[in-house]
Image 1 (cartoon, rainbow, N blue to C red):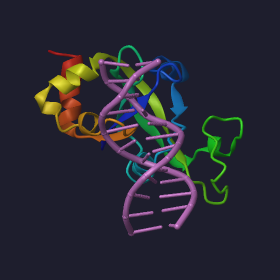
Image 2 (cartoon, rainbow, N blue to C red):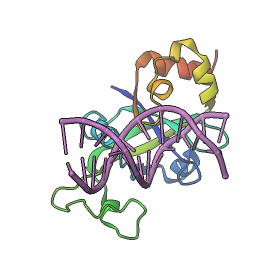
Image 3 (tube, rainbow, N blue to C red):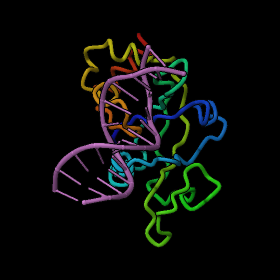
Image 4 (tube, rainbow, N blue to C red):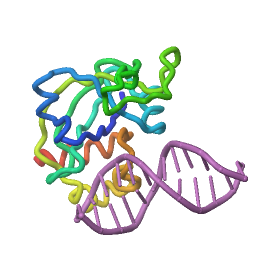
Length: 151
DNA sequence: GCCAACGTTGGC
DNA sequence: GCCAACGTTGGC
């Protein structure tokens, strides 16, 4: 069982949207390193922190689980989609997605709080913030849970 | 809106 | 394969 952090811009897709949908496909990942993680390492039943980026309150806002492993992201073939990729071959799709299922909200654990916690200084979020699909260690997972729900 | 970090593209 | 130009991410 592995742990992950998935970033989303809440103006486009928030934890509340995920809660309303229950299960949602995580489309639009267009970065090779993030794609490779989803393709090779994100497994059914893994736990995921949902992280809101590019908004007023950036940070971890909830938990989901992986409910379907990698399959082609059909938006790459849709010219109307912002995720359209004309260079992707339908016989060999370049981009994939996974499905996630809502578990629960957490009280916001802000990026500033994460950066201020010495136990989290090795987090990918802190060291290499731009990756949109990130591995989280069990220790990091527990540390953030404790920050969200002390005691 | 600014801008630093960093990923991608394309000429050579 | 190098690297400059360019585009995107994302915090602030």
